View 1 (spheres, helix red, strand yellow):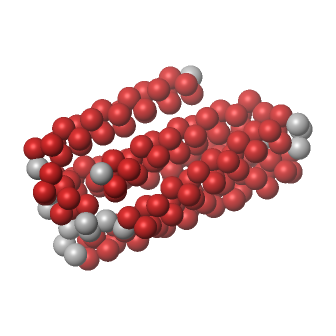
View 2 (cartoon, rainbow, N blue to C red):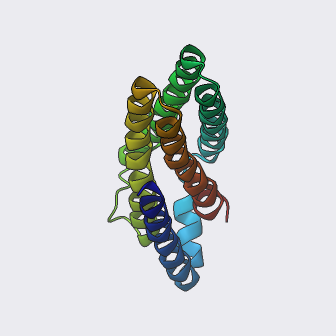
Length: 167
């Protein structure tokens, strides 16, 4: 069932990115101006944060399969913590944008930026909760399932980052 969820979530994010790119074609200057307000360095750091977290989740799966429950939990804890770091950096960017008077109605770029990254942030939070739950359950299959969702979250960010922050 998790794979159905993952594929459907990837389809939703893919559609969102496709629409973002389609609208961007109609107003490249407006999108470039909107992009100039974003925290590109923070988004780059967030990429490293999530990829590192994904590595820890993958190592936790191996530990669970080896019956190393304590090690698995010690690997999931920083993976979850790094999810929190991601959310804190994203919140910082949002706060700075709001302080500049930039919101979802400022420009189509910002509408898409807040929609796509906000939806992603909700998935990061859900993934953090899921990793905590599977860490508590501690069965290899549960940990693998939680890690699969977490890797989907990583993958989505690896796609969002260049499209929204760099193009």
